[in-house]
Length: 542
Image (cartoon, rainbow, N blue to C red; front, top):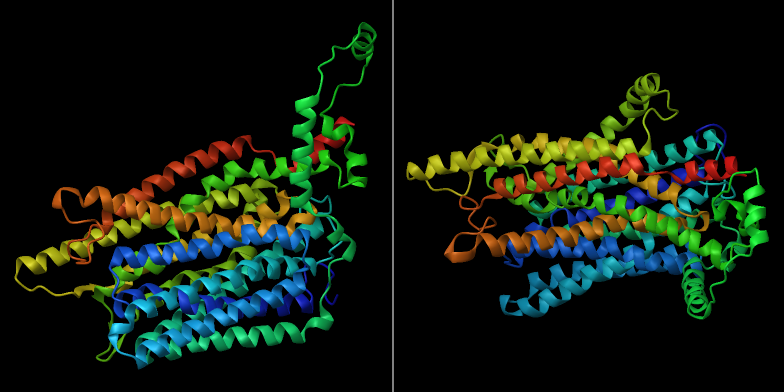
């Protein structure tokens, strides 16, 4: 592979990063402004549109968790990417035809058109469920696929993986930036038919480019497909349960106890004593159960990251609705589309990511004496803390917006637009972008390094599932808060009249929950032992 020395990425990796950016352009071109389409075109309420977007994003992010076991067990990644991209493109075609149909027919076709809209959105989700984790795992396969994970003893290879994850995210954010800024402007200015057709064309182009690069890719060894992780996990759990049901408890005799007492070598964990044999036989039940225990060991960290994912559901929903009520003029004619401000997140990532590598890592390396400056766990924690500050900033700005709106109503000047510049929303977007640099890249590397070698697709599925469950959790919080705050005839915090809504209280509520989640994360991180540390303990125990 070209450029395999040092930290340079090969041609195949670079091509796949470009393809990932094109896919993100298509997805963000649809998702970033979808709440506006649902409220302005489909005539949904603010809360219903937000819950719809959250549910769709949640389903889209959760689906890889269901597809990944089959990719690891039965399918190869290359044909999976091609098959999934076909479903992806079909969904975008259906979505474009939905906008075209609605523009062509009368308003009495709304109900059937709504059903077709949702079917097209969930067809996109089905395609993305196999596409995204397979593409990223396929990209990681390009980096010496026979090597161990970042838990390997070879620090140079570990750093190379870290560089790959950072540049992968850089490419994804570049595509997202273009999708958010360009498509939101086109959708608001030229209409939704063109606004959905361009993402469709981008996705078709990415599939063609991916197919053209077939000759330069590194493919997974075919023998790896003989190992079916999830199937063997189920079979081994079943076999272990049967043994426990029929086993007999026997006490050791006196000679066995004496022999144990006379041993001078300290006793080690069972998995370390049989580690070599298990590596030779990866299909053994004990080996598979150890892999399952690794996944369960990640569950507490996974849960603590959910509130971070909830916060990231706010920019395409309530942040966008918040911006629609603010002064958006630049000059006398041009108005900033509210969804465009989401580009501040990706723009801050693109601008600050190189500074993270060139400035922050060398400085922190001098302080911590750690090869990467800070550990992956510390990196995720810093990002979570910054996200709490971002929500506090959002709450302060919304309080000010409501204050100005109240003053206008007191003077009898009721208007949907408040004379308060939309650029006051920039700090919360930029802070979320900074937190993204730390947490999201850290999450990718963390899950990738902590799962068994042959379950790489599952690693990326676990990462995306955080945002999937976070989307559903966000919908649940919205429904709960709406039910509580609208009781006794009161206005809900999510009132369609933005002068009556109390998004500031909701933002403070999210900031409090996120701060609590961050504290629990710090406690868990202090007790957590990485896979590499456990391997070193086992080696020292031999």
